Length: 150
Image (cartoon, rainbow, N blue to C red):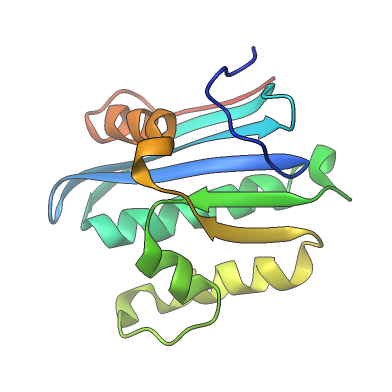
């Protein structure tokens, strides 16, 4: 499958988003990994229970890092994770944070950034991250957990 709305990217791009139906509320995370031609390599949507929106945003970045780290096809590739959460991106990229309930997840993500060569996490506006948003919304509405690799 080729995703027609994909942006120019590094070798691999992981567009991710978290969604919460209430704050806190039933929440889900979703993401789509594509190559530089827009070919979909991985899709996922997962329910994460009742959490707030910023927790969902951090959890989706962590899940993308895990999927990248444990997938042999990503070894030696330049990979950028794109999220629309400026707070989560700031925290995982090393800035101070005051959300101590997420300290373990944030430090896990920072560890992945150190051990996975070529991995980075960047901001992408919500308007250009709509497919990942729809995956997360589906997951928050009990759409069923799915991880699919092409």
